Length: 273
Image (cartoon, rainbow, N blue to C red; front, side, top):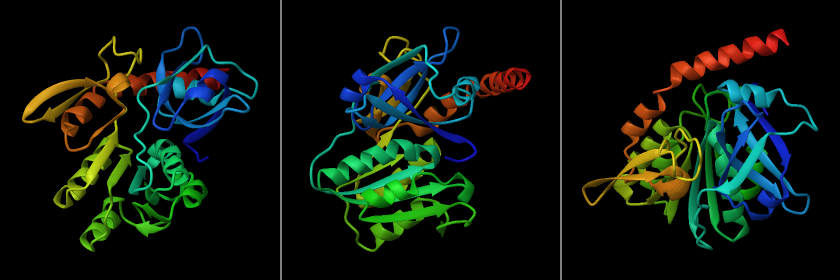
């Protein structure tokens, strides 16, 4: 799809039959591999296949990126998590950032299918990282593409056109934001003065996907009280106004050095192979 993002199609009939937009799977590449969660980017129940889009950022995604057509995965478990709420015809703004667009796309497609008026805003660092533009165009009544460096579409980030539309009196029943934590944090901040409901999709560190390990815990602030929830079973969708994004970003950085080391080690092994 681009130099850092890959799409694969996996034969998994039971998952394909039941998965809904917003849900995810957990896979292992091989018996010694780690378990990683990846969101379902699309299904074909008739053919029994599931599409998964991932960014190469660590050892497991590097290994996944080296698989060839016909290879098998050790595990492919799902669907997990709660599907994105679909309320029928309404006015929705779907915002995707970077590889988060792979999660936002099936949500926008399903909303369009059930009759919602969909405005989509998708943002990338530059033109080379652009993905899924045609797919979003097909399911959106209006599509805005932004790039941080202005190399394609509108120059700037996704919050700028959102703020302009809201300030001009544009009405949305809800906003669905999916992407980097900092992006979702600022989407929430942009929408707050206008009182628009914001749903965000959280993708923290996750191991078992069943609520047992506690690795994917996030903190919500509800009625002044801090409460813990687990993204794998209570989410991944949450009320954006309740999420403690600063804590989530801090937790997400905890294993950055380990992940970088594991990725470099995997790359070295594949170069020698």
